[in-house]
Length: 173
Ligand code: RP5
Image (spheres, protein in one colour):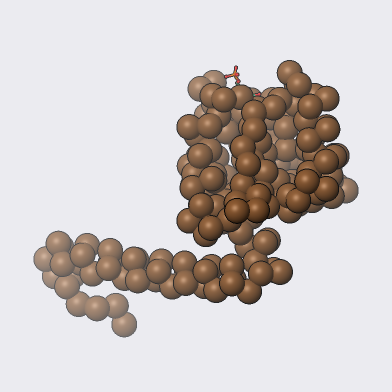
C-alpha cells in the first residue's frame, strides 16, 4: 500500500496516546508510516524528514508532541504539505501546555491542530483522509459511508437509552 501519510511523534511515550490516528487511517485503507523524532532532541532529523516528505510520496503529515510541543510547527516550517498537529496529554498540565504550543502558530505557517486526547488523535487521522479525499473519489465515498454509519449508530443509542428510561420510549419528532 502506498504510504501517503507520515505520523511522527516526539517520543515513543506518545504512541499509546495517539495511535487512534493510525487506526483511523487503517479503517479507510490509507497507507501511513510512523516515526519517532523530536524537535528538540533530533532537530536536524525532523528538518530532513519534513523537507523530503513530498518527494518521498507523502501527502499529509501528522505530528504529535507533548509539553513544549514544537514538533508540528517545526515540521510545517520545512514543508508545504498540510500538517496536522496532535497535542499530547501530559501529566503536569493535562495537555493544555501541548495544545497551546501546537495551536498558536504565527500567521504564514499553519498547523491544523486537533483536540487533546484520543478523540483528537482519531480526528487527526480522519482529517488526513478528508484532505486525501479531495483528489480521490473512492476515499470520498468511504467518508460518506462513515458519516452514514454514525447516523445509524447514534439512532440505535438513542433508541436504547430511551427504552431504558420509563416514559421516554417515544421517537423524537
Ligand atoms: C515531547 O516530550 C514528547 O512528544 C513527549 O510527549 C514528551 C516527553 O517525552 P519523553 O521524556 O517521554 O521521551 O517531546
